[in-house]
Image 1 (cartoon, rainbow, N blue to C red):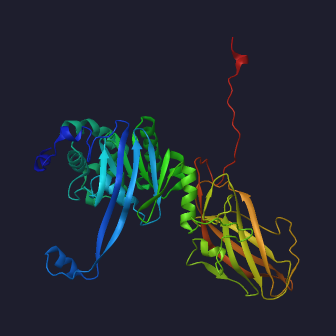
Image 2 (spheres, rainbow, N blue to C red; image 1 turned 30 degrees about the vertical axis):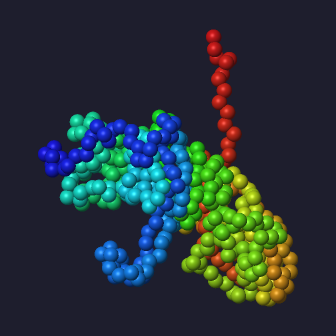
Image 3 (cartoon, one colour; image 1 turned 135 degrees about the vertical axis):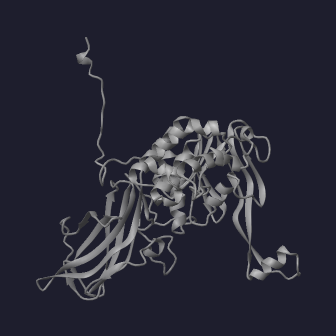
Length: 450
């Protein structure tokens, strides 16, 4: 293709060999991050930035922000290692340093193997080129010869599955077609090390399934994978080891379940404390359960005002208040209701919706044949709903209700729609909304053998 000759090609042979960015490391190690820091200078005024760049003046004021602060870890060949953390923890920064997009401010980095990075999909695409031309453009930028790209073209086109659109200019593509082609190019260059940053959620559900199958194929082939995701279910399912970053520092490393439990505590500010919700131990004076939850800022609330949900939360089987529950574990939703008038037999309700708004399941004290009796004005009652989490991995919205019959009429005393979310972490999803938890056996029938 003639347009390739317009591109200054990198040294193809060099790109195909293992490369080391800092020093010699063991053949067993694919990535070594050694006391790496990334510091950004923050200026109060733009002119201060200009003054420092031009070395003008002595009173230039700036603050140093550590996007990464003395981070060290190793990734061994054939390992799948996950990196998790809150927004701003440094996850994407460390991946960009590993892939060479950014340079560290301090520390050393060793890479032993050819990398393919799924970071900003399609970042190297030229919108005026066709899909085919962009395949060759990106392949050339990665160090492949035209002949090598020819050999990979069929697998790229088959994976992208965008038909004849591949011969049209990329600027005419839908966003879905764009990411499908970009992902197909990135995933089919046969890397030794795969770097993934939230890229497995591209496209529709069928394309996502194809991406995950490719991801699993890489694992079976013994490829080294470094994986950043907010999808804790995928982290739990695919990773051999997990690293937890917080505010630029590594605060945990180890077994996925152990580190995910740490991350859940980080999310609600409980990393350095143990919270027993039954006794409210570990809660500082004035702190409510809901203060430790991620709540819906636009919750839909209404009612007669005769009662009010004063406090509420979910907590896992370790007693940690959290928005994240592991599938198969026991968990509890706990509420405190304050009554402003005396009410006979109020009904306390809990329901789950999926993100599309479909009510999946729920229960209440009437269904459970619990008589609540007379709740006097000024009193508060604590209600707990405890159950095993059998819903599939994903996001769910929790609604709470306190209703009943007053003078023969059905009355909503207080209702909170979609008050908080629960993220269900699953390493095994089945079909439908919930898992039947089937016990499956497969045995060879020896009676039919001659």
